[in-house]
Image (cartoon, chains in turn orange, purple):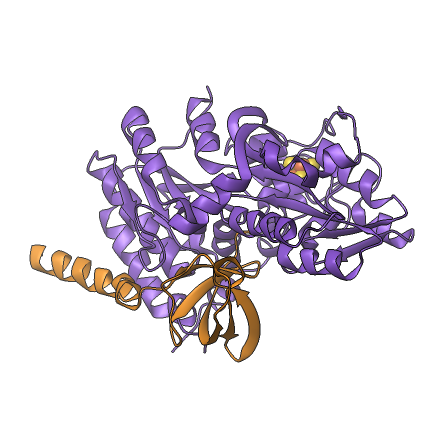
Length: 81
Length: 374
Ligand code: SF4
């Protein structure tokens, strides 16, 4: 029920802050998403959308951390051996 | 290929994380994932079967569909049966059994029950149908609250007289505390729900971590996210630590989403809520503020408080608290199945009973193959 899907912002319709929307592509499927809660968003950013509303802008640097973390712990265990 | 999604389903990385968890696990630990979306992923991909046998995963109360009390389902049905009403809901709610029928039956009997993708769509429907009443069934956790608040806000701004909401909003931290306080509690560490924390941040969990000396790791929903979250949690447990860690940093910050929080605060206030199977939990829900009473469907349709007992054989409340597993329910797969659910945890695809019913019959290999080989 809390499912939120990442999608790429293709265009933004500026307007009243609470009505601000954008066209967001979810792997090619395009939907109109409300952007009122992510005022910092720019075209080409990725947002997480939940029931028609963007709830966050995906941080691309942090997105890498899951994989870096794995390398870190692998190095750690190798150095202990 | 969906960016920021597919790479978190990589089979090789999943195995590496599983190995890493094995390498640090010495003692037996019981960890609860709070969110139903995580339960679904764990059972679907067989992630629990990749873990060392010392680790037990318990499935938490994180499915709003599952915890919506019977009374509210009955109220929804009662409103949807009225002739001039367009009743809008997320699809999941339609098959949740009331005491006699469900919303799907109301539709089969001619009721205008519509599935919408967003509460904002319900506002559009109200706008397009000025002579009829449009009601939205607002269920959800903190994740969904900004969208529902925004629907109310937009309806007010547009001066809509024919839009209202049946609100069944629940909050996660009070439920976590209720689980920790339960006499039979076995949970030693939590994976907190990444999207709830996307909205709220995780400051609310900091006092819980201290008070109960329990590690909490804010965790995402993809297989790799969940395995990393488990790794972080086990590492804390093995080291005797209890702190809050953030696995889902690509979406969650400590403070959360401020504009979304403001929207929630403007429209909703914190109230006590009853959880299906668990009972009343103080400060665990959201209700519309006084200023928005005109949009409160319960007031608009004057529905008195229903008190309805839950089916006695359903132990979903104990499952939601991690005390029992679905297969320990005598009705599981026999009297109760997804076609004829007795309890809500069998209805929603995120409910533990439904997830076990759907995926637990697959051999482990087939589940693992759902992960993506590169
Ligand atoms: S199997 Fe059915 S009856 Fe048993 S706890 Fe789950 S939902 Fe309730």
